[in-house]
Amino acid sequence: MAQTRVLALVGSLRSAAITRQLAETAVEVSPSEVEVIVYEGLADIPFYNEDLDSETVPAAAAALRDAAADSDAFLLVTPEYNGTISAVLKNAIDWLSRPYGVGAMTGKPVAVVSQSPSRNAGKWALEDTVKAAGIAGGKVIEGGSLTVGETFGKFGEAHAKEHAETAGQISAVVTALADAKAALASA
Image (tube, rainbow, N blue to C red):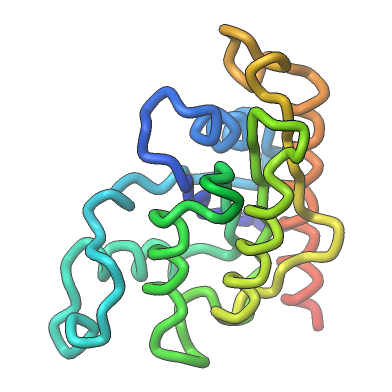
Protein backbone atom coordinates (compact mmCIF):
# COMPACT_ATOMS: atom_id res chain seq x y z
CA MET A 1 0.00 0.00 0.00
CA ALA A 2 1.33 3.45 -0.90
CA GLN A 3 2.07 5.97 1.82
CA THR A 4 -1.04 7.75 3.08
CA ARG A 5 -0.69 11.24 4.49
CA VAL A 6 -3.36 12.10 7.09
CA LEU A 7 -3.78 15.67 8.30
CA ALA A 8 -5.05 15.77 11.88
CA LEU A 9 -6.92 18.92 12.85
CA VAL A 10 -7.30 19.37 16.60
CA GLY A 11 -10.31 21.30 17.85
CA SER A 12 -8.75 22.37 21.13
CA LEU A 13 -6.03 24.98 21.44
CA ARG A 14 -4.90 23.98 24.94
CA SER A 15 -1.51 22.24 24.78
CA ALA A 16 -2.40 19.59 27.36
CA ALA A 17 -5.92 18.97 26.03
CA ILE A 18 -7.15 15.40 25.83
CA THR A 19 -8.21 16.20 22.28
CA ARG A 20 -4.57 16.91 21.40
CA GLN A 21 -3.53 13.72 23.18
CA LEU A 22 -5.91 11.73 21.01
CA ALA A 23 -4.35 13.24 17.87
CA GLU A 24 -0.87 12.49 19.24
CA THR A 25 -2.02 8.93 19.87
CA ALA A 26 -2.95 8.67 16.18
CA VAL A 27 0.62 9.63 15.29
CA GLU A 28 1.99 6.96 17.63
CA VAL A 29 -0.29 4.07 16.63
CA SER A 30 -0.61 4.62 12.88
CA PRO A 31 0.52 1.79 10.63
CA SER A 32 3.93 2.20 8.99
CA GLU A 33 2.34 3.09 5.64
CA VAL A 34 0.44 6.01 7.20
CA GLU A 35 1.90 9.35 8.21
CA VAL A 36 -0.31 11.36 10.58
CA ILE A 37 0.60 15.03 10.81
CA VAL A 38 -0.92 17.08 13.63
CA TYR A 39 -1.51 20.52 12.14
CA GLU A 40 -0.23 23.45 14.16
CA GLY A 41 -1.53 26.93 13.57
CA LEU A 42 -5.33 26.75 13.80
CA ALA A 43 -5.22 29.50 16.45
CA ASP A 44 -3.73 31.90 13.90
CA ILE A 45 -6.49 31.53 11.31
CA PRO A 46 -9.05 34.36 11.32
CA PHE A 47 -12.72 33.50 11.45
CA TYR A 48 -13.95 32.75 7.97
CA ASN A 49 -15.10 35.88 6.20
CA GLU A 50 -15.71 35.91 2.47
CA ASP A 51 -14.28 39.43 2.33
CA LEU A 52 -10.92 37.97 3.41
CA ASP A 53 -11.17 35.05 1.01
CA SER A 54 -10.18 36.94 -2.09
CA GLU A 55 -7.06 37.08 -4.23
CA THR A 56 -5.01 37.64 -1.07
CA VAL A 57 -6.03 35.01 1.48
CA PRO A 58 -4.63 35.48 5.01
CA ALA A 59 -1.32 33.64 5.31
CA ALA A 60 -2.53 31.32 8.10
CA ALA A 61 -5.58 30.25 6.07
CA ALA A 62 -3.45 29.74 2.95
CA ALA A 63 -1.03 27.57 4.95
CA LEU A 64 -3.93 25.40 6.16
CA ARG A 65 -5.23 25.02 2.61
CA ASP A 66 -1.76 24.08 1.37
CA ALA A 67 -1.33 21.45 4.10
CA ALA A 68 -4.78 20.08 3.30
CA ALA A 69 -4.05 19.96 -0.41
CA ASP A 70 -0.89 17.93 0.32
CA SER A 71 -2.87 15.41 2.40
CA ASP A 72 -4.70 12.29 1.33
CA ALA A 73 -7.17 12.19 4.23
CA PHE A 74 -8.29 14.04 7.34
CA LEU A 75 -8.61 13.10 10.98
CA LEU A 76 -10.77 15.66 12.75
CA VAL A 77 -10.42 15.49 16.53
CA THR A 78 -12.84 17.56 18.54
CA PRO A 79 -13.90 18.13 22.11
CA GLU A 80 -17.56 18.70 22.77
CA TYR A 81 -18.10 22.35 23.69
CA ASN A 82 -21.60 23.21 24.83
CA GLY A 83 -23.01 20.22 23.00
CA THR A 84 -21.35 20.82 19.64
CA ILE A 85 -18.12 21.10 17.62
CA SER A 86 -15.45 23.52 18.79
CA ALA A 87 -15.30 26.88 17.03
CA VAL A 88 -11.64 26.46 16.07
CA LEU A 89 -12.32 23.21 14.21
CA LYS A 90 -15.49 24.53 12.58
CA ASN A 91 -13.53 27.55 11.37
CA ALA A 92 -10.85 25.31 9.83
CA ILE A 93 -13.55 23.31 8.04
CA ASP A 94 -15.10 26.55 6.79
CA TRP A 95 -11.79 27.68 5.27
CA LEU A 96 -11.22 24.24 3.71
CA SER A 97 -14.71 24.21 2.20
CA ARG A 98 -13.89 27.10 -0.14
CA PRO A 99 -14.01 27.59 -2.99
CA TYR A 100 -17.26 25.67 -2.81
CA GLY A 101 -17.14 22.35 -4.62
CA VAL A 102 -13.36 22.35 -5.06
CA GLY A 103 -12.06 23.10 -1.56
CA ALA A 104 -9.04 21.24 -0.21
CA MET A 105 -11.25 18.71 1.61
CA THR A 106 -13.38 17.83 -1.41
CA GLY A 107 -13.48 14.14 -2.22
CA LYS A 108 -10.97 13.10 0.45
CA PRO A 109 -11.65 10.57 3.22
CA VAL A 110 -12.47 12.04 6.63
CA ALA A 111 -12.73 10.41 10.05
CA VAL A 112 -13.88 12.10 13.24
CA VAL A 113 -12.83 11.44 16.82
CA SER A 114 -14.75 13.29 19.52
CA GLN A 115 -14.22 13.31 23.24
CA SER A 116 -15.94 14.49 26.36
CA PRO A 117 -15.64 13.91 30.08
CA SER A 118 -19.36 13.09 30.04
CA ARG A 119 -20.98 9.74 29.34
CA ASN A 120 -22.34 11.26 26.13
CA ALA A 121 -18.78 10.79 24.79
CA GLY A 122 -18.96 13.84 22.56
CA LYS A 123 -21.63 12.27 20.33
CA TRP A 124 -23.21 15.64 19.51
CA ALA A 125 -19.84 17.10 18.54
CA LEU A 126 -19.18 14.03 16.41
CA GLU A 127 -22.52 14.37 14.62
CA ASP A 128 -22.02 18.08 13.95
CA THR A 129 -18.44 17.56 12.76
CA VAL A 130 -19.50 14.74 10.42
CA LYS A 131 -22.22 17.02 9.04
CA ALA A 132 -19.88 20.00 8.53
CA ALA A 133 -17.11 17.89 6.95
CA GLY A 134 -19.59 16.24 4.58
CA ILE A 135 -21.07 19.55 3.48
CA ALA A 136 -17.51 20.84 2.96
CA GLY A 137 -17.01 18.04 0.44
CA GLY A 138 -15.16 15.50 2.56
CA LYS A 139 -16.03 11.81 2.25
CA VAL A 140 -16.76 10.85 5.85
CA ILE A 141 -15.91 7.17 5.98
CA GLU A 142 -18.51 4.68 7.11
CA GLY A 143 -17.68 3.27 10.53
CA GLY A 144 -14.48 5.30 10.78
CA SER A 145 -15.45 7.63 13.56
CA LEU A 146 -14.98 7.28 17.28
CA THR A 147 -16.44 8.81 20.43
CA VAL A 148 -14.41 8.72 23.63
CA GLY A 149 -16.36 9.41 26.79
CA GLU A 150 -15.68 9.77 30.50
CA THR A 151 -12.16 10.86 29.67
CA PHE A 152 -11.21 12.21 33.11
CA GLY A 153 -11.83 8.85 34.76
CA LYS A 154 -10.52 6.87 31.81
CA PHE A 155 -7.14 8.57 31.45
CA GLY A 156 -6.55 10.21 34.84
CA GLU A 157 -3.08 11.76 34.77
CA ALA A 158 -1.85 9.44 31.99
CA HIS A 159 -1.58 10.35 28.32
CA ALA A 160 -4.40 8.94 26.19
CA LYS A 161 -1.91 6.77 24.24
CA GLU A 162 -1.30 4.76 27.42
CA HIS A 163 -4.93 3.59 27.45
CA ALA A 164 -4.70 0.41 25.38
CA GLU A 165 -8.36 0.23 24.36
CA THR A 166 -8.43 3.84 23.14
CA ALA A 167 -5.08 3.49 21.36
CA GLY A 168 -6.40 0.39 19.57
CA GLN A 169 -9.59 2.18 18.55
CA ILE A 170 -7.66 5.14 17.17
CA SER A 171 -5.35 2.79 15.28
CA ALA A 172 -8.43 1.24 13.67
CA VAL A 173 -9.72 4.69 12.66
CA VAL A 174 -6.39 5.61 11.04
CA THR A 175 -6.27 2.25 9.25
CA ALA A 176 -9.82 2.83 7.98
CA LEU A 177 -8.70 6.20 6.56
CA ALA A 178 -5.80 4.54 4.71
CA ASP A 179 -8.15 1.83 3.38
CA ALA A 180 -10.63 4.51 2.21
CA LYS A 181 -7.85 6.41 0.43
CA ALA A 182 -6.75 3.19 -1.29
CA ALA A 183 -10.34 2.41 -2.33
CA LEU A 184 -10.81 5.89 -3.79
CA ALA A 185 -7.54 5.61 -5.69
CA SER A 186 -8.56 2.31 -7.26
CA ALA A 187 -12.09 3.40 -8.13
